[in-house]
Structure formats: structure tokens, C-alpha cells
Image 1 (cartoon, rainbow, N blue to C red):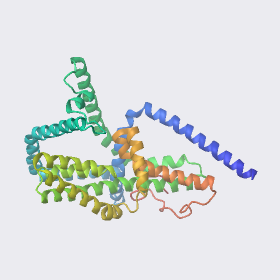
Image 2: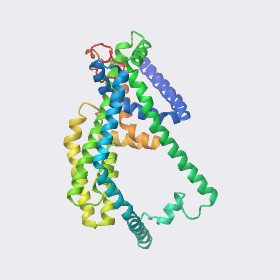
Image 3: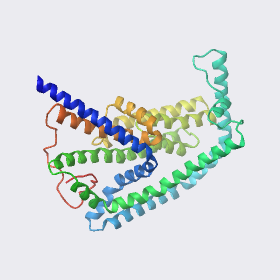
Image 4: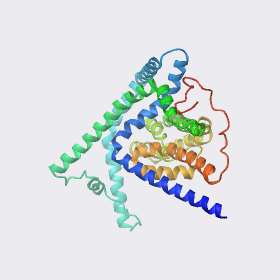
Length: 377
């Protein structure tokens, strides 16, 4: 009994120590948060491109040449896709520019109408008018020159940061891809010999989870975007390709992304056609998501992240509140990482049981294991 109490006490102090360390790391991270967006996107590029670079390296090409060819191939593929779709996209964007004033006026009229009805019929929730929304967002007509300059400077700064991310992320990713095996070996040298098997095992698991998530989500988003575009084309929705691309892009964010991606299609249908078209858009979105949820995602992501839907929702709410768009983007892989690490530590140090798979052999040692960028042997 006394030994059990001592074990519980050590575990409690161990958990308190972890919380303190996490708080300190979070404080430091918040102070230097400006460096994280380029690193996040660089990491995503590395996870996506490393299997190709590793395959080329296995064929005898130096990694720097493999990374350059991978970048060149991506640029060529993107340019070919842009050239193939540019006439259709240009036509649809011209239609969008022509119909945008009407769409905006119709949406504003509907919002103002709902605002009047919410006050006249004493709704539980009072819908604000468009003017009230603009004033709350800082875009109303009551802004003085100083406030307008401040707003303009804010948007210019955000644009500069986004441009910096788009420039720095591929550069950082290129250097990481080029020197990844040496970086991995240097990191392995810092691990004590006694802890090396356990650390390498966890690193291999985390590499499978994070890399599988990003590669899988990108593939799923592309497939869903194609399905939605085809469905919207079938129901003769204007701007069907643009709306389909937006739906596919938002599908990268699990669970809530598909519903957010459906909003532009419903708005376009209501503004350019009628309620029947909006219902048709909703049906296309629901059918595409059902196919995705029951066939595509289980097939593509079967070896990646395994999280309960409730855990995914809570993770999106938590990390989205803390980190905005980047929080939403990283919510699932971060939660899966915490699940793997927390489950391992709990089983090992609290329950005192062996960890499944730890004694199984990892991929064979070599200068550059295929597709693996974590600390693996």
C-alpha cells in the first residue's frame, strides 16, 4: 500500500513538472511566435516531398538534385494545370466580377431583412444589420483618417507576413530536404543509449502519423474538390469550378471544413438562381461528404491518424482558439501526437505495462530510410 502511495506521489510530481515545462515552453513560443508560420509550412512541404526525394536518392541522385527535381516537377505540374484550367477559370472569374455586386447586394438585403424580422418578431437572437457588422469590424463609414491609415497598415503588414511565409517556407524546406539524413543522425547522437530504442520507436510512430495526415488530407481534399466540382457542374451552378476548388481547399480542415466550404456554393446559388439551386448545392455537398467519410478517407487515411470524432472537434475548438488558422491546420496532428506520447508515458510509468510494438523491429538501418524523416533506425 505504501509503495502504491509513493508511486502515485511520484506520478503526481512528474505530471506537475511536465505542466510547468509546458507552460514555460508555451510562454517562450508565444514570444517568438513570428517564426512558427514559415516553419509550419516548411515542415508540411518536407513531409509531402521527402518520400519523392528519398526515392530519387535511392536511385543514385544526390539529395540536393532530388530536392531540386521535386520542386521543378511540382512547379511544372502546377503550371500545366494552370494552363489547362486558365481559360475556364478566367471565364468564371469574369462572371464572378460581374455578379459580385449583385451577390453582395442580395446578401446585404437578406441580412438586413433578417435583422428587421428579428426585432419585429422578437427573436431570441437579434441579427445585426450590415452597417452594424461593418462598424463592429472597423470598416464603417465613421472611421476617421487615422483609423483608416491604421487599418490599411494592419492589412499591409498581414500581406507582407503572408508573402514572407510563401517565400521563406520553400527555402527552409529545401535546405531541410537536402540535409535531412545528416540532421537525423546528429539528433540520434544526442539521445542516451539507454533511451534510444524507446525514443526511436516513438519518433517512427509520430512520423507515420504526421506525415500520413498531411499527405492523406491533401489527397482527400483534391478528390473531394473534383467530386464537388463535377456535382455542381451537373446541376448547372455558375462558378462551379471556383466553388469546387474552395470546397476542396476547406476540406483540409477535418469535420468543420466541408461545411464551411459549402457556404460559398449556397450563397452563389441563392444570389444567381433560386432556393431550389441552393438545395441542389447542399445535396451535392452532402453526397460528396458521405462518399468521402465512408469510402475515400478510410481508404486514404487508414494508416494515419486514429482519433475519435469528439476528440477532433474539441481539438479544433481548442487549437483554433489559440492559434487561428494555423491552430486549425495543426489541431489533428498535434492531438494525435499528444495521444501517442501521453498513452506511451501513461502505460510505461503509471500502469507499468509494456508498450505494444516497442519490441518489434523498426525499419532496417541505412543512410536514408524510404519516406521517413523522423528519428528512425
